[in-house]
Length: 248
Image 1 (spheres, helix red, strand yellow):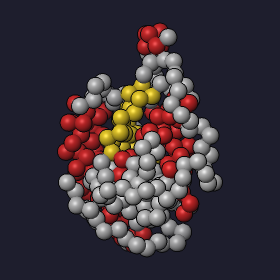
Image 2 (image 1 turned 90 degrees about the horizontal axis):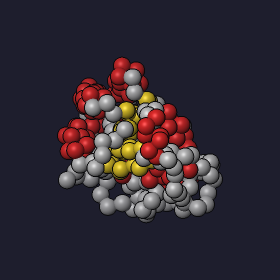
Image 3 (image 1 turned 45 degrees about the horizontal axis):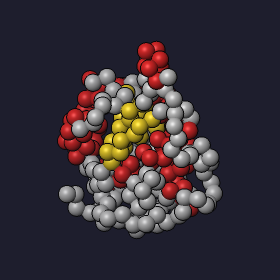
Image 4 (image 1 turned 30 degrees about the vertical axis):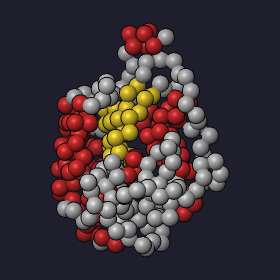
C-alpha cells in the first residue's frame, strides 16, 4: 500500500499547481454536482440505453481517475461514460485508477489489469506521472515507464489517450524543462492521442477544485469531461460494419 504523501499547502498565483497526493481515505467533495458555474455540463447526463456495439474503454491511472474526494458516480471515468452515451456512443468504461500510483506502479500492474478485463478494451486512457512529479522522481524514469506502458498497449492493438501533466512551479525551471515535454513527445513518437494538460479546465478556477487545490470537484470533473470528450471520441477505433449490424 502506498504511503500517504503530505499535501503542499500553498498556491502559486496564475501558475498551474499540479500536485497529485498519494491519497488515503477520500474526503467529501467541496462542491455539489448540481449547482455552481463555469463548466458547461449539459451534455453529461444520466446513464441511458444506446444502440450500437459496446465500446470497451479502460481508465488507467492515479487519483484523478480514481475519483478522490468524490461521491459514487462522480469520477471522471463514470462521468465520461455518461457523456459518451449521451452522444450515442455505447461506452463501457472500467475505472482502474489507483490513488497514489506512480508510473512505475502503473507499469507493474498493467498486465494484470488488462488480463482481468472481461473483454479487451478498444481504448485505454492513461493518467500517470503526477505522483512522479510530486516526489521529484527523475523525469527520465517517468518517460521510460510511460513509453513502456504505451508500447505494451500498442503491441496489443489498443488505442491510447495520454492525459498530459505539467510540473508544479515550485520544482523549478530545470525540472519543468525535463518533465513537461514527456507527454507531447511520447504522443508524437507513438502516434497516440494527447490531452496536453488534463487539469487545464479547472486549475485556475477555485470553485472547480477541492480544498486541497489538487483534485477537481464534481463540477470540475464535468468541466474536464466537456473539454476532453471530443478527444476520447476521436480516439476510438472505427466501428467495423459487421459490429454495426450486430449492434442493431
